[in-house]
Amino acid sequence: MPAHASTRSRLLLVLALVAGGLLDACAGTKGRDAARQGGTLRVVSYNIRHGCGSDDTVDLARTAAALRALAPDLVALQEVDCGVRRSGGVDQAAELGRLLGMHHAFGSFMDYQGGRYGMAFLSRFPILRSHAIRLPPGDEPRIALRIDVAVPGVGELTAVNVHFNWVGDDTLRYAQARALAEQLASIGPRYLVLGDFNDEPGSRTLQLFQGQALEIAKPAAARLTYPAPAPVKEIDFVFASPTDGWRVHEVRAVAETLASDHRPVLAVIEAR
Image (cartoon, rainbow, N blue to C red; front, side, top):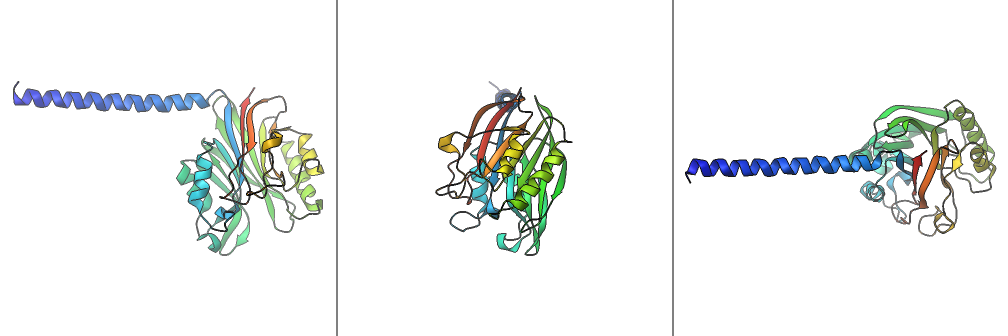
């Protein structure tokens, strides 16, 4: 065979292999996306304690690894720093978004150590809008963070991230919960509320949301969320509205004991 023919044959073979590889890669991506369509969502709530683990070491890569293992579509994060000295001046929401390949939105409670302190969302879907809902102050200022996302198989979905007042007396916490509940009444029927409620089952704060939405209730063996190494309290929750609009496939407090002082909560839910 002439040298130029041999070269041409090898080139055609390489092109065929590359094309085949690209088609396989595209098919694989399409398959993964299709698997998430049909209205099924992997939702996570996680108080990350500004990336500071139960070993008191700030390690945002470890936080990202804990989240990556859950393959989430939507993540509500509490206790998030942006430009704060204690966590190295990092924009933590943006950095976690970069590490996980997700969109992000940040909402600030207050200025702190040269930066801002608050909460954030990460989303596999583009975030259409984000809005801070100002709540009555507690021992610190408080907001709820609202985002709207377009979810395949669901349509436009509102998600609200909460982190209510932490002190033992529930007066301020309940005032914050009531203020948010009034806002939810105007949102529309389909929404999620998730986060660190700083209150336990049976409290009037939890009962308020149980009266408005479906609590994605955890099984008894995997319901406790705080403190992460040996939890004794269930204070992190996911609620979904309307109450008859969701099918629950899985929900649990994830046995991640090192990345934060809270355990993440994973809920796999499907729109009816």
